[in-house]
Length: 257
Figure 1 (cartoon, helix red, strand yellow):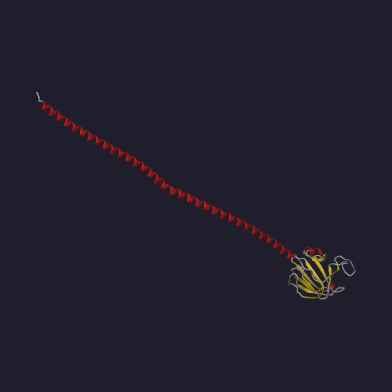
Figure 2 (tube, rainbow, N blue to C red):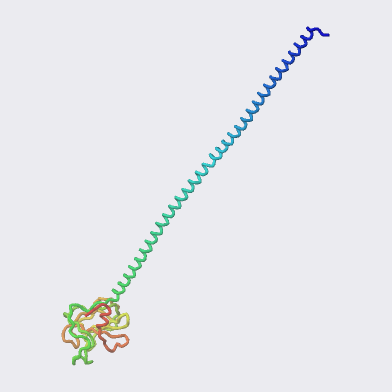
């Protein structure tokens, strides 16, 4: 049988071993807890880092897109401005084109009016002499005329007054013609003829072209005459043998007696 002292020693040894084992366990537990805590912290840190990285990534992505959006907006605005300027310019050009068209029409109208005026002026005649009184009209009857009636219009005026071409014409005959005295015959552009009779002098020759208002002779009292005057006759190209009333033809060309 073991002695009490031996049993007590064994108990002391067992107690010592247990304490040591417990200390190791406690130490190990602390180490495990510390490791777990460290690992958990690392995990949390990892998650936090991932979260931060995600937010940063979002920030980066948005930061990268924002300039693109800004550039697109600026480009759109610039394009709109250019379009607006082009539209304005097109409007101005259209207005200018319309103005030019209006001016062109007005110029053409003025040109047409001027052409009509010029045509009328070209077609307008002048009186065959000046300072006159009508002493005898066409168609008056009397024994003084071989035909029994007056075949022209008598313009009584001062001796030597110029007799002029009523229109552009060609001289077809000049010289003495019996009862007509000194005579000039002018053929008009339409073939009709006008005769100047009883002239004191003749200033043109046959075949000569004369212009409206050009002097062809001077008023006289030659031939079958009763005093200084111009016996003016009008003869149609279709019948040069007989004189017709000059008044309608003078009036047609702007001359009223």
